[in-house]
Image 1 (cartoon, one colour):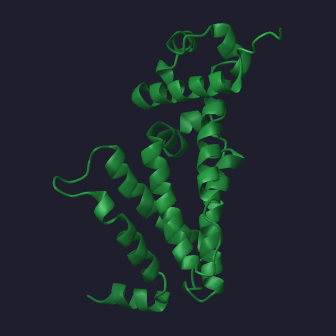
Image 2 (cartoon, rainbow, N blue to C red):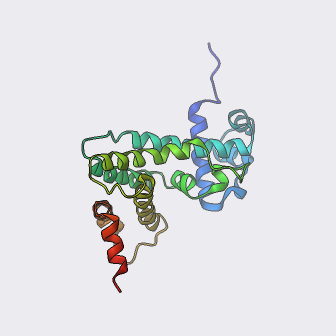
Image 3 (cartoon, helix red, strand yellow):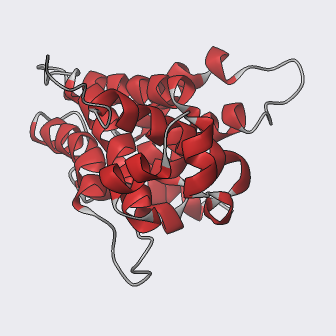
Length: 211
């Protein structure tokens, strides 16, 4: 009879999700490998076998958060309506955040998890992968005449990402104004922003010059 494999993928994921909850609630300093093992009803040997050390655990935690997010984004296939694709990517962004609040916070909020051993790093490759689909959709929109060609696609994508991130953060932090729900305005806000980028920068500058 074959020996049971105890240090398997299921255990690795269970440890990662428990670690994510700890980091979300109390920060990386509160993450103890011994306590994590006890919480997951396994041994510290298993933790070290799967991740090597705390730095390895934190790196794996970020990579898992990014992997799941990239997989969600990949579900949005490019269409002949790039502007609509941008909005759909924004909706997926919110869905991921609501479904995985701990991993979302690690992916977009905690630099110590992204680069636990190198504060000077620009961030791992996974960070670029989470942003590329949005930039690509904007670039296709410019080529199709749906967006102003007077701005870099990265600038337009950043404005969309910033809006989505801000609204999602209100939900996750419990800071929605009393009687109001982000869910009631989220898609419309993205739609208005996308429509705004159809206006030429010259017109926008003209509005800014009005006293």
